[in-house]
Length: 331
Image (cartoon, rainbow, N blue to C red; front, top):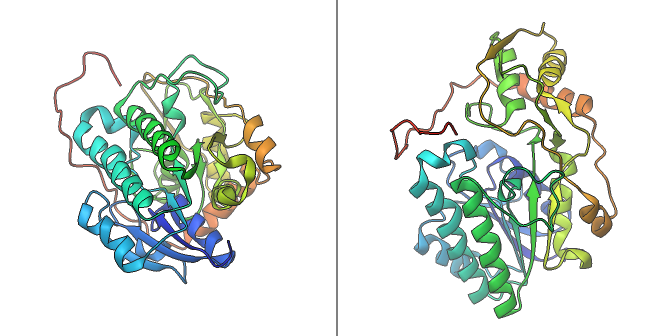
């Protein structure tokens, strides 16, 4: 597949730019699309044919195939990924995460794309199913997870009907260089890192004893890029991430150490959230024959070095909330 032409959506974003870079390094011809709502033009790797546009624009999607295609593989990594805001931005969430994906699947089928790689989320599982396993019955509890799971089902139906291969990844807690440090709504490592660089205390909800397994992007992007070449990945769904969990309070100290500043922590009121999130990764290890290799200390060091090279950008809060009423149950 070294000479294949592929499409990467969300190419100016975090994971999308890293996947595109791996594809370029493997000799593929890469066309990338992004609306730059959460990504940056500087993230687009050299060698990518960049198209700025919104995937909810059907004419834009048709033009990608007419002007830039056909594509042997589609890597769909663009999304509205602020899960916690999805209750208050339902139409925005479904428009970007579900309808745009359906339009992209239509175009891929019509364009005879051989393989469609989709970045879903562990949000499809809901709560109370630890460890998270791919054979568990999904029960998403917010519009973001609902949209992601609907996309999974739609992709499976399209692939079965039109004989298009697919691979679905459910990443979790991915961090690393090119992550958006100006987003205050998600990605705790990026939030902590920005606060340290700005001389602010790190915001920890509750006692910080919640545990998560944090995964550097170098352990995620290569697998996503390789998926169309892996026989065991055809028409399969995978959790992807590290096994080793760390407490959020310990993470805060590790981020401060990586930046080289004292750990200043501001404890905020606890919020309703899963206390411990653990995923099973035996399926992806069986198919790809690899395990994650970047330790948290190594990953934080690399990310901190990258972040120091940037000017600290002002926070960019989401300003398109559709529901302003306070929820009866906290989200």
